[in-house]
Image (tube, rainbow, N blue to C red):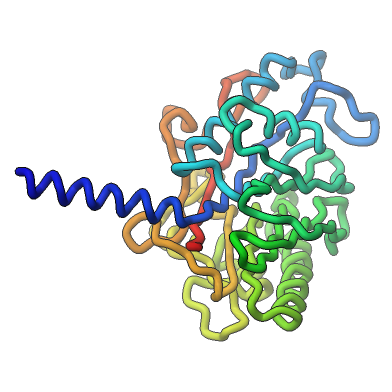
Length: 321
């Protein structure tokens, strides 16, 4: 019995040591993180106190607290990098970073206002004690309609040169065959950035994360971004979420089917740690994030408030030091 206890303690210590050596990278489409203030330049009317949904300060702060709880609980410590989609502006991200559950991480923020008609953007929260930002920029997406900018940030993560891209590709509203060319065009833009970084700084680890509105085997990810579960060329990116999708898992549900629209893909020189068995990507799934059918629970079903968080589940990877 003593020997068994000793072995268990050693295993726990070993697991804790591995966790301390890892940097967690998370992506979360937080679905309509709007404040309660009208912005005349965007279509944010559905999320105002006098709208049918009666969006108000109480609901807004509840959503912030729920998102912060997810971030705090994701790993043994707050993730080093948190990519976000569907945030209305910098102010809502700043309020999120100040939430009690994650305030100790002292998250700094990269955010740019994009021309999306609904006024939603992507953003990056990062821990300055683990990621030293050197610069950032926004790239206007190559899409016919007004959509989210592509966010790029670069710096050092635990002494390793790191380039981060956060994106939210154009949606499928209007039909896949009509909207696919826009997603593919944006994916090619991202690939151009990846190629330029690889040429200029081959040792840099590259992280591309976002809601791609496509599954891993769709052309935008597989052919244009060149991200697969089994890269064949050194320049191809590794997508650990392709294998999860093959196993029938996903982060959102549409028409009764699970989709893996949320992906984190990395350059092959990024040292990922296994999270569960051999999987190097993970979906954060907790009962309180799901409805009674086991699907992600939004804050609303139509105009009825449910106090859910998002219609997407968050994903993450662990990068070894």
